[in-house]
Amino acid sequence: MSRLTVKLSGAILLSMALMPVWAAEVTVSAAASLSNAFKEIGAAYEKQHAGDKVQFNFAASDPLVQQIAKGAPVDVFASADQDAMDKAENLKLLAAGSRRNFASNTLVLIKPAESKLALAGPRDLAQAAVQRITMGNPASVPAGRYTQHAMEQAGLWNGISSKLIYGTSVRQCLDYVVRGEVDAGFVYATDAALFKDKVQVVATVPTETPVSYPIALIGTSAQPQAARQFAEFVQSAAGQAILARYGFGRP
Amino acid sequence: MPPTWLAEPAWIALRLSLKVALWATLIDLVLGIAFGYLLARKRFAGRELLDALLTLPMVMPPTVLGYYLLVLIGRHGPLGAWLQQVLGIQLIFTWQAAVIAAAVVAFPLVLKGARAAFEAVDTQLEQAAYVLGLSPFAVFLRVTLPLAWRGVLGGTLLAFARSMGEFGATLMVAGSIPGKTQTLSIAVYEAVQAGQDDTANLLVLITSLVCVTVLVSANKLTPNRSVQA
Image (cartoon, rainbow over all chains, first blue to last red; front, side, top):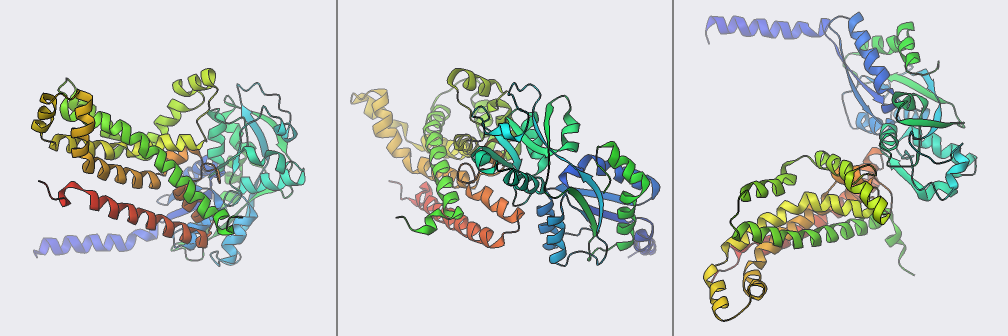
């Protein structure tokens, strides 16, 4: 090995050893409904913390818990309901005491913009003209759980259950309505707001438990400091302003 | 009364997968023999281009195929809108949509097997049959097809296995409706997403067993194992 090679590899090793000090890469697993707002929050965070990188992994909340439980290297987790976060907590995946609620949302019933169906609320979904209704799969999608509870409480569940098309995330349900493949669907108000020209909000659906979003740090995180900084940024005035712009409410 | 385990979601998903795969394979078998014969025997401009186009589903990501199908047979797609208006049929989110997805994805396997098998048939045998007075169609049915059959069947069994495992395109056009369009592979995905590892374990075991069985059968039928006269 020539002297130059030794010096070069030494320099490379040294720089690699120094890198984490100024460049932390935070991996955030977040509920699909947070996609747009969190991407903007991530960009704002990176601007404020030069060198830090935030990478996102968006999906329905339950699969995100499963990934973390199976060892995915995640630093921060934000879910769309308390159920999913409870699962993560019960599996002892969270850093103790780091769980906070940071946003709220509402469940809405939507239909394609060009739809001529006379829908005023969930009660009208029982009519024969409504053939296909999409909602998240309650087994893995928080929006689906909120929907099922709301429909069961209103006594409408049995009337619509044969028409349901389960989506693997709330964004897939939104896409089905945007494409006009279904007659109606249950999504969050913030999702519907992204496609104002393609979907029409029929009604706000009251939910048994309020739609609230918790965020927490993952216990096995390799960069707990940066992870905490990001979670704090989401709850800061700057983060909250971005969330509000996308229609999310205060926690 | 049927035994209760037949009503378990895993068996319902298995039956649906078998139904979808059988229909898809049947469609592929008919089309695969037709196009395989055409490509093996007829000389025409764009023959290799047609072969490439028909083989495309084998190399394209299932999500790309799923998107093409969604755009084509969806409510607003050219074919989907026509079916809806003229026949009142809606394909999206039905098991028939799953059949279409599986048939498209698995088609190249039958085609490749059939083309190679037809090319391997000695044309002198066919000519002898012509001379003895058989019609072209009778020659195909009684001479060509029996001689090519093992190759065709080998590809067909692979197509069946591929149809059983179809996931991406199927999920996009047929969705995941338990008992209606939730095939084995989609049920596995849903079970893992929901953290139901017991169900997932059972489902992957069933899938693996079916696929191994089909592959062993396909290997037994491949032409190079048979003794050629």
